[in-house]
Amino acid sequence: MAPIKSLLSPLSLLLLAARSSGHVLPRAAVDSSSAYDYIVVGGGTCGLAVASRLTENSNVTVLVIEAGESVYDNANVTSFDGYQSAFNTAIDWLYKTEAQTHADGRALVLHQGKAIGGTSTINGMSYTRVDAAQIDAWQEIGNEGWTWDNLYPYYRKQETFQIPNKHQEAGGSSYIKSYHGFKGPVSIGWPLNQAVHVLGAAVQSAYEALGLPASEDPNGGDLRGTTAYPSMMDEETRMRSDAARAYFWPHYPTRSNLALKSGTTVNRLLWSDEKDADGNVVAEAVEAVSNNGTTSILRANKGVIVSAGTIRTPQVLELSGVGNPKILSKANVTTRVNLPGVGENLIDQINNSVYASLKTNATYDDEAPVASYPNVTDLFGNNTSAVGAKLLADLPAYAEKIASENNNATSAADLLKLMKVQHGLLFNHGVAAAEVIHSSTGSKLDAEFWATLPFTRGNIHITSNDPKEQASINLNHFMMDWDAMSQAAVAKYIRKLYETSPMNNMVGAETSPSAASVPADATDATWIQWLKENYRSNFHLLSSAAMMPREIGGVVSEKLQLYGTSNVRVVDASVLPFQVSGHLTSTLYAIAERAAEFIEQADGRF
Ligand SMILES: Cc1cc2nc3c(=O)[nH]c(=O)nc-3n(C[C@H](O)[C@H](O)[C@H](O)COP(=O)(O)OP(=O)(O)OC[C@H]3O[C@@H](n4cnc5c(N)ncnc54)[C@H](O)[C@@H]3O)c2cc1C
Ligand SMILES: *[C@@H]1O[C@H](CO)[C@@H](O)[C@H](O)[C@H]1NC(C)=O
Ligand SMILES: *[C@@H]1O[C@H](CO)[C@@H](O)[C@H](O)[C@H]1NC(C)=O
Ligand SMILES: *[C@@H]1O[C@H](CO)[C@@H](O)[C@H](O)[C@H]1NC(C)=O
Ligand SMILES: *[C@@H]1O[C@H](CO)[C@@H](O)[C@H](O)[C@H]1NC(C)=O
Ligand SMILES: *[C@@H]1O[C@H](CO)[C@@H](O)[C@H](O)[C@H]1NC(C)=O
Ligand SMILES: *[C@@H]1O[C@H](CO)[C@@H](O)[C@H](O)[C@H]1NC(C)=O
Ligand SMILES: *[C@@H]1O[C@H](CO)[C@@H](O)[C@H](O)[C@H]1NC(C)=O
Ligand SMILES: *[C@@H]1O[C@H](CO)[C@@H](O)[C@H](O)[C@H]1NC(C)=O
Ligand SMILES: *[C@@H]1O[C@H](CO)[C@@H](O)[C@H](O)[C@H]1NC(C)=O
Ligand SMILES: *[C@@H]1O[C@H](CO)[C@@H](O)[C@H](O)[C@H]1NC(C)=O
Image: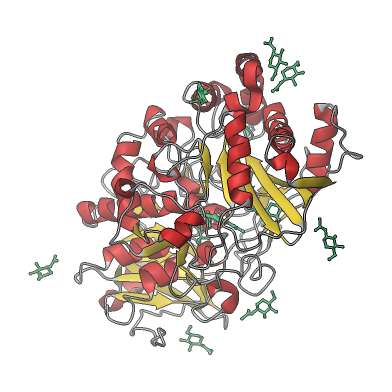
């Protein structure tokens, strides 16, 4: 099937002089007869989910504007075995961070998808949800209605879970049926040729010996344990189930109310010169530029949904005049909405790998990887309460430090409250404090890992009013002691696992870091130096347009409305107020599914 159909026409392509004016679009200049109800900025993971659900109602018209193109037939995307092959190709944005001052000045490359389907077309496909308490925390900080119980139906709505057969069960697949959905767009499952679990079983029993049990299914709101987790893939075709294949291509050929403009980048939102009755600015249209350089103004009758991702959403908002006036004026952008939280609160994780060789010649390449999700007690044993008390005592200093670098988006006092909630997740609720993924290729054993809840906050801001210029990205990796120390604790835990039966019979020499460079009795300082020299971003970037009360630096309301605007919502990874312990996509789809309902219920009155 060739899913690509030609662009729905006519689009209201008012060709204005590029770099036109301020941010006000004169009403008279707009041809409203060919406008859409909603424009979705960014046809990625969340954008396509929202567009797909909204256009189930044939009376609602939606235009998706996406910078990238179709990757429907791109084998680097479709192949289940292709993870990382799309890196550094034309569909990778390849953003660069500023030199990371707390990580020896290293600047990092951030892979993000530039394609219809966004980052879901290049990600690792791992499918795990979060700990229930992590969603409940969103309500605790002021986002009424955001609880695990409220979000849970949307996790199930998104998926078609493929029940494992006996062969796959021998390969480690297990599940609890009631956790899953069977009618949703995203295919979740395991490869049919998955090998019998031998290494995976050994990994799980060594963890069991350390007190971390096998989990029957990590997707019911309790992550702790070990699991041969499922992936976002179709078992029969062995293909990636990305946002485009799941939510978009099945409907695009038949829904005349769903339009797409690909190869087109949105520069900014354009506002009406009149505010609404509540004093909020009203988005009328977006200014976009296609790959051939043509600038067009596309009109939205009811509203705009910004889904450009954690890195790009703040840039679009700031170029539209929504953000911190000091930052905007430096970039020669006129402020329309004073909203200093835009681009702040950015949270990622740190990814490292411990590599070892196998003792025997047996190989385990076709086994499903096993992930472990330990809590702080698993990591710190009888030191846990001391570690927790020390962290709690450090939080005021952490909050001060972030407040001194966050352009006054959130005060130290408010940050401290947020950090105490995060501390409670780790030390009272016992959410997964780390993830370790065990896999093997040939004679090599890989344990890649990340502590899940760093306390640092970074930021992303424009430095120019030229939309083609990348924003300045600062992740502040390793800024807080906890972030470095907890990452080191996971590395030590992996070593302990390898010394535990039956893994001690299978694991040979550690090749990285190796006992020579980080000895068994190494101090945390030695560990942390090695971590800094060998880490990369975990690509779980979020929170740069955080859903929080406006008074504490939030950017969107609990209905995902952009503060200070009457008809703009943000729906993508940038709205999560805290980092989460599972992989992000399941939670993003759940948010997008719920956002579509908010929009339907509001019926254009955002
Ligand atoms: C390498 C990597 C591995 C990962 N592995 C996993 C995993 O195994 N499991 C998991 O669940 N999650 C994983 N993630 C995380 C997850 O994939 C992302 O968090 C998620 O896809 C982000 O969704 P989004 O909707 O926020 O943004 P995106 O999916 O990135 O969508 C944003 C879209 O907007 C477009 N865009 C940007 N700016 C503009 C503009 N100005 N105009 C028009 N279009 C624009 C982009 O091209 C893109 O298509 C991984 C991420 C990466 C990078
Ligand atoms: C679509 O609009 C028509 C005409 O206004 C109306 O009769 C119908 O109920 C609407 N359908 C939906 C699903 O809203
Ligand atoms: C797939 O990736 C390889 C390198 O990883 C690259 O050479 C090739 O051009 C890519 N294919 C497409 C269609 O982009
Ligand atoms: C540029 O591309 C757009 C479609 O994206 C098309 O409508 C327009 O005619 C093109 N302009 C030129 C000069 O090729
Ligand atoms: C802002 O505008 C002034 C005056 O036109 C110019 O000198 C300056 O370089 C501009 N700054 C940026 C960041 O574009
Ligand atoms: C973590 O880093 C290792 C290399 O250090 C890499 O092989 C692995 O894929 C990374 N994990 C993620 C999720 O990017
Ligand atoms: C592994 O293979 C090599 C070469 O094939 C062989 O010499 C060696 O004896 C094997 N070792 C074991 C433990 O089977
Ligand atoms: C607990 O603390 C002691 C003393 O600082 C240390 O030697 C030990 O390794 C710690 N144990 C764990 C599991 O962190
Ligand atoms: C803590 O546990 C370790 C083993 O993990 C043990 O060696 C040590 O004695 C314990 N310390 C206390 C104070 O119980
Ligand atoms: C933050 O607040 C301080 C004190 O009020 C002020 O001096 C500083 O300029 C502000 N910074 C920004 C970026 O707004
Ligand atoms: C970690 O999990 C174990 C087993 O359920 C539990 O005993 C412990 O209290 C948990 N840790 C925290 C901090 O909740």
